[in-house]
Length: 182
Image 1 (cartoon, rainbow, N blue to C red):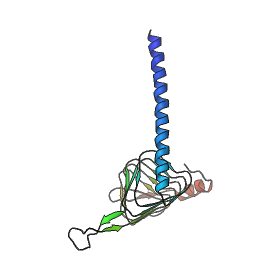
Image 2: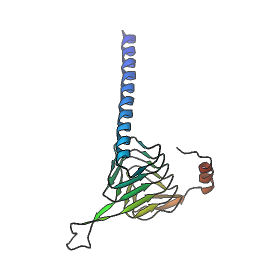
Image 3: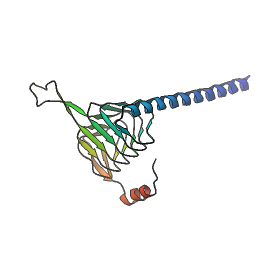
Image 4: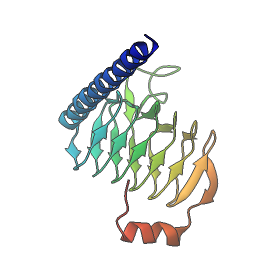
């Protein structure tokens, strides 16, 4: 009797894993298709693994991977090749106009641009505000708020995000020349 229970539990686990995998694949394809349709341009290999919202003018490079992203506003965001995001990331591309005809702000908006270089990795819950350029090979630590430009190969963290250190550029360039992209 104990063996039968064990076998049934095993079968149920396998069925659950298969159904779960199929659901995840269905959602990934649905999210990816929706992002492609809304983008100004889209490179090959786009993967949207979890729900993302892309407002504004979006440009995707090749091999971009998203695990949860909210692009808020009608500004422009350009993602470089081999981009990876953690979960619950946010990019803000629109602000109220506080220099207009009313206080604290008027009814118009100011649209911003965010440019993200190739081979950038954002940790979980990263926030990026408009008019920021993030250089090539940058890593942004989880929970960081990026409100200034980030130089190539920097590893940044904090609120506001500051350079913690830099990647080993020789190692980075060797992997890049060997085309070892994840």
